[in-house]
Structure formats: C-alpha cells, structure tokens
Length: 182
Image 1 (cartoon, rainbow, N blue to C red):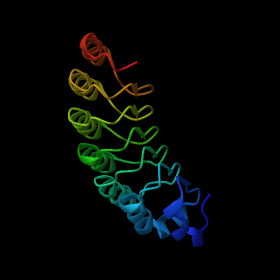
Image 2 (cartoon, helix red, strand yellow):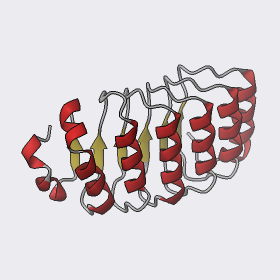
Image 3 (cartoon, helix red, strand yellow):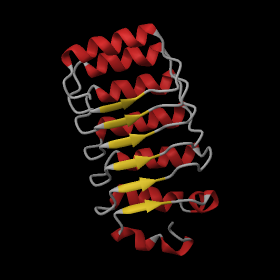
Image 4 (cartoon, rainbow, N blue to C red):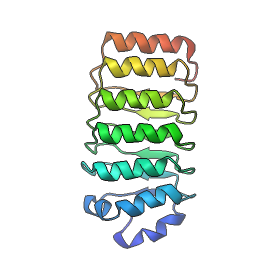
C-alpha cells in the first residue's frame, strides 16, 4: 500500500499497489504521469477500484510510451469497453508490457475485438487475462485470427465468458500454427 503522501517516492519503486479508491481518484494524474515516465516501475496493481473510466483512459495513454512496466493488474474495476479499447490502443504501441490482467470487468466484444486486433501487431505481451467479462464468439474468432500470427502471447485466459463452439473452433485453428501459446 502506498500512502497519500508517498506519490513522489514511487519514482524509485518497482512495485506499486493502490487499495484506496479515494486515493486513486485523488492521484490518478500522478499515477498516469508515473507510468508514462518511470523507468523503475515494473508492476502496478489497481484492482477493485470501481468504475473510473477517466483514470483507466489516462493510464492507457501513459502506457503507449511506457518502456518499463511489465505487469498491470486492472481486475474487478467495472471497466467498460471505453477503457478496454483504450488499453488495446496502448498495446498497439507499448513495447514493455508482458502481462495484462483485465479479469472480472464489464468488457464486451467491442473491447475484446480491439484487444485481439492489438495482438496482431504487439510483440511483447505474454499473458492476457480476460476471464469473467462478457465476451462472446465474436471476440473468440477475432482472438483466433490474431493468434495465427502472434508469436509472443503464451497465456490467454477466457474462462467465465460467453464463448461457444465458434470461438472454440477459431482458437483451435490458431493453435495449429501458433506454437507460443501454452
């Protein structure tokens, strides 16, 4: 836990976690600035913070140029497609993030397809956790297409979504050529 007066001390931290929704809202600009500029921060955990689309969009924008953050946890934040699509845009440009967790949010196919499209060009993301959202076969098919060419992603979690046979077939087809996914 990082206290309210400790934002400046974060510049040298490798791991940061916010547990207080009010604190996160008060410091969202500083957190986004930290992500955009810190060369030390490797892990950032912002889970269970509630729906704050503006903060998620600020964070995604900061990720576009970040070259240090390797793991980002955004689980259980009630994030919607606006935040999910912003994260997808960040993944298209980011060259450092290896693990992105977006579990138990409110993402639908708009965000799912955008994330899949980002995977077509992203060469560093190794783990993508999307379980517990509202994704359907539309996302599954898009992910299958992305995984035909993506050689970086090693783990994809889609549990507890609304995927059916069409998604399963598309993902299975991708696995015929994709040797990175475990």
